[in-house]
Image (tube, rainbow, N blue to C red; front, side, top):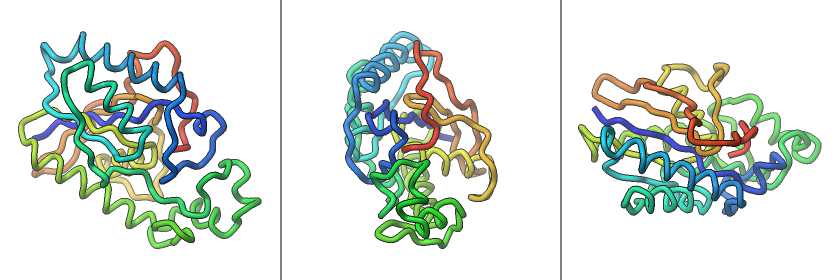
Amino acid sequence: MTEIWVVRHGETPWNTVRRVQGWEDIELNEIGIAQAQALGRHLAANTQANQPIDAIYSSDLKRAHVTASIIGQSIGLTPYIEPGVRERNFGVLQGLIFNTMHEHQPEAAKTWASRDPDGLIPEGETLGTFHRRVVGAINDIAARHTGQRVIVVSHGGAMDIIWRHANQLSLQADRHAPIVNTSVNRISVSKDGWKVIDWGDVSHLDRNSLDDVTA
């Protein structure tokens, strides 16, 4: 069994206005940096003695990699880059505000809202392709770290996929679990499948991000 702590990147300027990020390489804002620092301090103080972290992996996008680097500095680990846990490519929807994207790209927005696994957003990727990419990457990481505990810093959309897969729910099922910036979300991966250990831990934060959509 591998225990994986999936962490969402820190807050960005686009998170605060609920703008679709996708593959756009957006930097953390000051709050996002502070969130990552808080998590790093928390891990250094509370996990290394009883729950040592063996490795850190990160999406190749800056908002995730910088978050992972800040965490890694606190616990003496350098992140490995794993492009497989990058956010979904939202194509023509990237850069639009979530609440108004139906006005600017109605067909693409309809495809996004349908959660059709085969629905293709122009210039983007299907939800099914995204699902297979993320699940495959997590399985590969788990196989490399059997019996260990690993942090994976990723994105809201990827974490939605991970939560559904660990709960054996379809891509169309409602999600009642929160996904907030620098939250810690623990799953186990073994030959028997994935299971959620704990989800949505933000005990290290003084201020929780309200964003639960933009990735």
